[in-house]
Length: 159
Image (tube, rainbow, N blue to C red; front, side, top):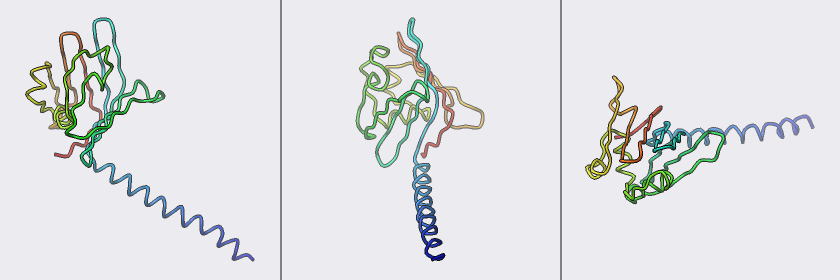
């Protein structure tokens, strides 16, 4: 009788221990993807907004998330690298009136400090680089009415 109780206790421990290893391997795989984490600030004439953003890319798909605070729900947009999405879909339409379409590859290039020529034609873009990094830690995007600042806290962009 003692052994049956011992076996009943050991079985769940073994099962949960194996499940934990599977979860850790999934987490390690997701860390291998390209990602950028940071904060954003948007300034218009009288409006100011700020929050956080995350960019994740892997397996031909891009996920871009925006949030005001970590306690509030975030806006998440999933699209393929080649799909064109409007900046007004990423940010609020009333803040950005531009109908400029950007692909996931162009967004990645912007975060790497290498914006496309068409993006540079439509927006004034400037970058601030840290001494030891080849990627920017601050990106400033300006139009006539809007100024967007992206401050990158953490990044793992695979070339």
